[in-house]
Length: 624
Image 1 (cartoon, rainbow, N blue to C red):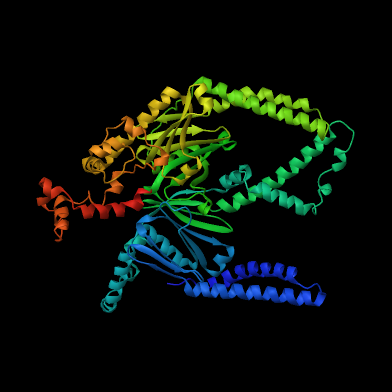
Image 2: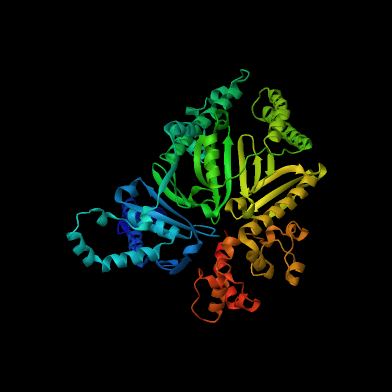
């Protein structure tokens, strides 16, 4: 299939602007210096750049092909360098649809496909029809390509019969009956209200707004700082005038950044809506740039509940869902997709438990000597600021620098608030980790999603007998140091917690996979990430909580996924089917009574070739 024809003029316009600007500068630099020749040469170069951009986009459109088969999504693209990609449907994690104002006006959309373990967007279709984009999103996530194809073929074969039958009936519902995939029940979980959107926009600070605020101030002042900043006060001999001018400049900068941040947040989360369809969460958001995507529940690695200041003061919070296979920076989500941008805290907890039914409980706090460590750290920062103020007052602007020493009064307060804001808990089926005062985040990690447990100590922590324990998952947020981490707990408690998490992980794997899954782990077909070299050599699996379970490090690439997902190709088959497959005969009925009898050892042992094929099939899922 091909892209939408409207993608040619739309992409050509964007490409022509960039190419025309490039050749404009080339024409300016290469012009001989005479006025008439300059204009002619520059105009010719710009027209050449525009024409080149249009030709390139036409060729890109003609050479771009994509096809959705029963088990893969194939894309062939490239004008100069040809590239063919084939992504198995089982590896596809998320399919997002994006539209800006102009794209919605002409009825096209961009489709972004994310796969398991991908470091960037795997496939991007720019651009297809809106209906085609929704069809691709539905089929790539649900894998109902074959069913829709068979339904369409059966519908075309039975057109004559249905026409003849409809002549003798008066029931109009027969022609309006939709296929099974379109009748999937959609339940609305959350829709942002105008009050919540206003609060979110006013109190959210976007990091990119500071740069845009500086640019806006530069344009407003006509690139002349004197128009906005009273530089004459800095040169005045009156006491405190220099400090007032600096404070005025900082105030203008913060005001511009705040206004731009509010506008960006408003346009980003306008019309936010979260629904549940089957085993997926669907979200829609955006005013100028419209986003539509899915969050597969079976790929959820971590729940992140945020309670930032000042939202926490008014009882508001937010919920983010971290999934496997997402690379930070894709979809602007930085490794996590916002499920609830802002809502009352009870509502956030209710939605979080609908995704993962975690239990309630109090968190354990760090020992009091960790608070002393924070006080020493803040004291060093305060001393540095006082020293910088003294140097500025003596070398640049004269002001009463000793007033900065008042921040010393905030050192014990800040250390205590930081200490009380951190906590952790190892529950029945989940690990909880909380940190942050201004931006408090609580991570909820199911035990069966843990990939590795890391116990680390810095040189400063060792002096105070403290440690940090991290429960790493397959979420891409873990790659950037945002994993669930219990910080500054007692070193002895850290070793105990590491062992406990390893035991809980093995218990969850055993409960979810059963004996057959453990047999496969013991045989070495799947690397659980908790076995030592000696255990692998002897062919036995270490028990839960053994030392070999805890020696694996993230550098070794240790992974531990739910066996229910990993061994579905072999362990879900009855023994009679395995025997029939090895003999190249049709498999028996799995529901027959003969399958209830336990087979012999020779019958139950699968073919080695089947195990290797099943391992290849499980490789993409293991990256989850």
